[in-house]
Image 1 (cartoon, one colour):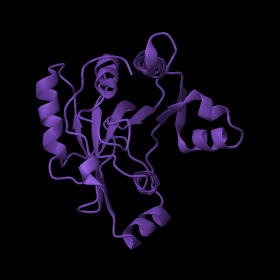
Image 2: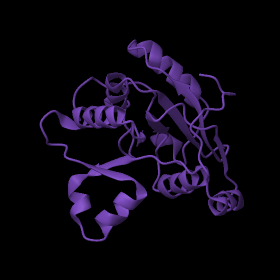
Image 3: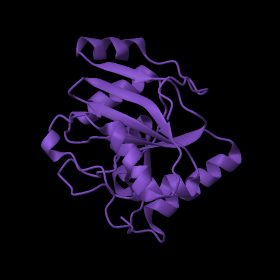
Image 4: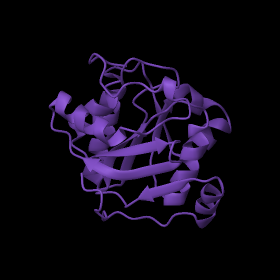
Length: 205
């Protein structure tokens, strides 16, 4: 992780979104992405307000990133189209192999075609308190052999920070220790609901 590194994949963000965030007292720290493919893990996720703040930050950075949604939501007229416009990717959680395999296969297709694809995930999986992070983000990142960007949604400092990049080693305890160091001191809007930075038992979700 090199905090001062300016990465090669840059975007032209929205001046209007940046202005709105400034008026709301928020700052965005972003130095681009290290390549065409990767996973962004967003933490902490404790409130419904995370979505509009994150969306404004996404537009301010000009960041193109996909997020996952239940496939049935995308079948709703107009709403499904809106989700796709925002960057939603439908997934069938009951499909053979599960969500992780679907995402790894998608990364493989995008890599083979040389197409840009970044996936943003919230490892807590819910705004309610959980005793640990879901392991899906880790397995997707490791299996797809892509970099991991750590996105900090910090209400305490009113900052959205995407400046830390790491390559997972497969040594779970060491990797999670490094991830916890980045998120240390950041606070969610309802910090009591933030899950501890550790992985739950490794099983499909």
